[in-house]
Length: 382
Ligand code: SF4
Ligand code: SF4
Picture 1 (cartoon, protein in one colour):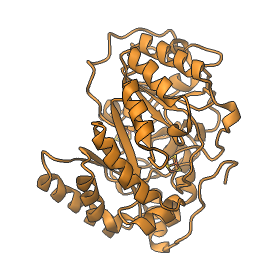
Picture 2 (cartoon, protein in one colour):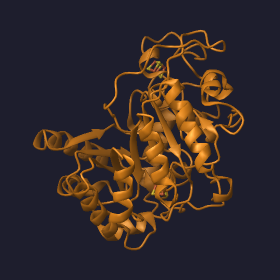
Picture 3 (spheres, rainbow, N blue to C red):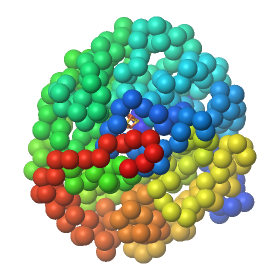
Picture 4 (tube, protein in one colour):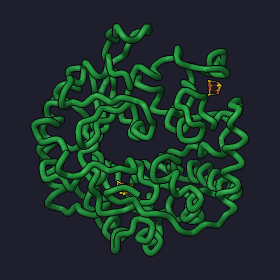
């Protein structure tokens, strides 16, 4: 997710009966308008069981969600999917959010956009576009996304986005099968006049966990990539901001996943389930409330799924007595569940976790396997 700074910081905290610490207002909502997508990336962060079109929230449902979110203190809406431009009401939703004073960001593969659709979105008040690329090289990019002509379309759409006067972030998900093209990916971001490039290592849950052996980079690839980003940041200073985080499997400490569970963000699924992060449905046993039955305000304060891992009270050792517990909040709950079987464990990305060594060894083994094949993401599950 982008750092977006159009608006002032979140308003004063409210309190929650279900949580012993003061509860701050959320800053941003990720609105997954649909799980439908013309691409089939093997690392897609959507759940294995994708929601079908006939269960998607209607226009008026989404508008109510944004109204309630704004009243709660949300400042930004990120329109995502699947592919959000498949929704014919996208411009109406952007307009509604814009009318509430919310910053609006479109997260898109771009392959369905054209000048007319972009003009409608600009008229509706769209503030920013985040465009995803699968590689710098067309043949490999189109193979990864499983969409013929997709890369060429994205390059053309990037020019339309800039011509429309919209700021552009390029998002490049990197893994073993494209990381050796990182120099060219950075050059492409510069060429299409992106102001920000997210070099996002694959997060291994959902579809990506299924395809881990085909996607895991080697240590040598990673070291080269990290040095390349360091050099590019200096070379392109003032022209291109590059976001880059060392991937979990080779890290020593976990990332502050979602900036802490239920602290600043929430995600609404196409059918209306409200999640603390986009991958939270991969955790068995959590109950997610829906905007069809509850208000956004009620869910933010009371939903069991949010309160289960909020703050630090839930933490086991070694997090419980660690001086970093309010810096990284114990890392990623989805990863802890995927790799240890319990979302209540310390993220094994942390060197202090008893599961860390096994995670690191799995990375090395996957990377060394040379497995070239992966399962494409598709409606109906893997
Ligand atoms: S990751 Fe790929 S398949 Fe998933 S929503 Fe994005 S473009 Fe579509
Ligand atoms: S022990 Fe827990 S709080 Fe400490 S660094 Fe590791 S994950 Fe973070």
